[in-house]
Length: 116
Image (cartoon, rainbow, N blue to C red; front, side, top):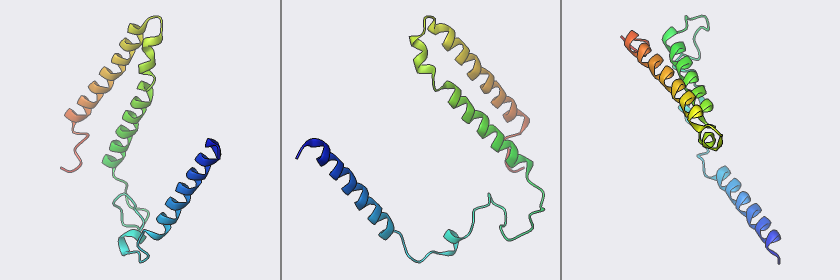
């Protein structure tokens, strides 16, 4: 046998074994916590017209902001391949400094306090 069919056979065998184990390994009797929907701390059986927590919304927006920051900084390691790498690192530093100052401002204003 050549190497390609052997590797394909081993790959499919491992995938088949892992699929079978994932079907047999979990418990077959679900408990109450696993069958209930997760609704970010809200009662899933209550009224949908309850007021939404503004603090939860602000924390979610901050999470999205810093998640976007990571996406913007991902190409940074390739910045040293450019003709002027210091310009790339300067702009990345400006972005990080602005986001850090924004985080400090939110912290000092009490926007990150979950409970009072």
